[in-house]
Picture 1 (cartoon, rainbow, N blue to C red):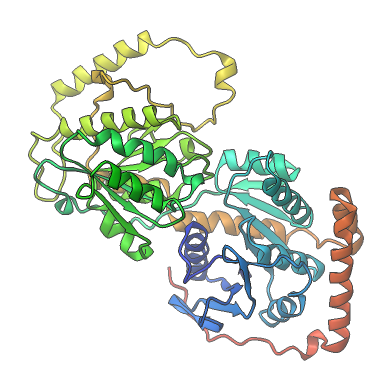
Picture 2 (cartoon, helix red, strand yellow):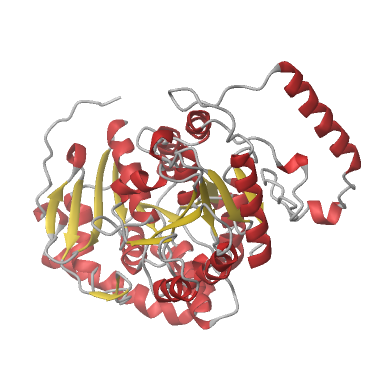
Amino acid sequence: MRICMVSDFFYPSIGGVEEHVYNLSQMLLALGHKVVVLTHAYGDCSGIRYVTHGLKVYYLPIKVCYNQCILPTAVCQVPMLRAVLLREQVDVVHGHSAFSALAHEALMVGSLLGLKTVFTDHSLFGFADLSAALTNKLLEINLSMVNHAICVSHIGKENTVLRARVAKHRVSVIPNAVDTALFTPDPSQRPDNGVINIVVASRLVYRKGIDLLAGVIPRFKNTPNINFIIVGDGPKRDLLEEIREKTNMQDRVEILGAVEHAQVREVLVRGHIFVNTSLTEAYCMAIVEAASCGLQVVSTSVGGIPEVLPNSLILLTEPDIEAIYSAILVAIDRHRSIATTTPAANGHIPQKTDSDSRAKRKRRKKNATEVPSTSSASMSCTAPSAVPTVAVDNGSSSSNLEPVLCPHRCNELVETLYNWEDVAQRTVKVYERVMKERAFTLSELIYAVYQCGAWFLAFLVVGHFLLRLLECWRPRSRIEVAHEPRRKRAL
């Protein structure tokens, strides 16, 4: 099968979408499929490039308009997109990210050319502000021309179905994954003088809850042996630096700025606790990478985050300064509760004795009988795989002081939950499903777009006639087919 991944976001840019496209493409290559990536030029990185394992990337000479996205013209890139799709003899066009104008244009061109189209949505959106309304309308129009959509979480699927008005049976849920062989724990990198490192790895923007983080850090001013390591850059970096100066915590708050993704693991293994303060997330890759490195995760319970990790790896809390602070205190107490336990040379934490296990089960049974029943109304709002939010108080009861898992056990557990081979195989099933469907006719595309808004029909009609003109000027038979060297199947 010949697949074309399209997105404005790809390497050398760093982010969750970039990593998803790259890792999925690599695994699809290993499964024997042909994959090419379409993106815009990044500075001097333009033209056709080959990356790891022969992955072919087209860096199209298109100017960036805003935030690494091209100007959404809908029809100006039709000649280039048509030439690449026909030259590579693409079967499936797979667009990524609702923010990517290039992905939306490629999906429209692919549908008009009779190709099968798939779209993956990586984000959650609201309905109140103007930017969200425009993005939702654009997504609704494009998904009306797409064979199938993929979301990275169940809450993301609900969000996409509501804002794009797409049928549920046309949307599948396939989560992200993490390379657990790359994100391995190394407890020897942690300080051994009683200091606990709290790591934050995020874009420093409002949506990531940096304002909450700025309110949490000063509360540890008078708490000794607690340090912060912050990875990432963005407009909120000045706020964190200001808080660090005001609280005189220059020696305890380390702001590293932007770090290459290959170097993130070197920072994570220095920490004991990972904190995520996001206000909205469809699926948070950072917490999975942190858990894979053996860190205890503290995160806000928003979006699809409750679906991502089991409660043995994460403490969930409300997006509130006091709640986040209390959850961090619980995580700190858990680590300090094993401070007197001597770890083995490989970093493993010795297992509890049978008597300890029996006592723990008795406490759990006793606590379970004291928990009030939850109303059916509240249960209906919770995803089936959601992790309950941790109820935390400053007095931290013994039930909250469950010992943290061994870092290597955390890595093994994440590996069983998420791996790119499983993600690729599930994505291939989506491809096989859409390949069995017949291509959309022009009348069906016009009717689908008209249902979303007659104003976009102008772009669809212009795109159609432009493709007809290009077919007369340069027929498909005259487009040179790309020849690729034969590769061995790498699985």
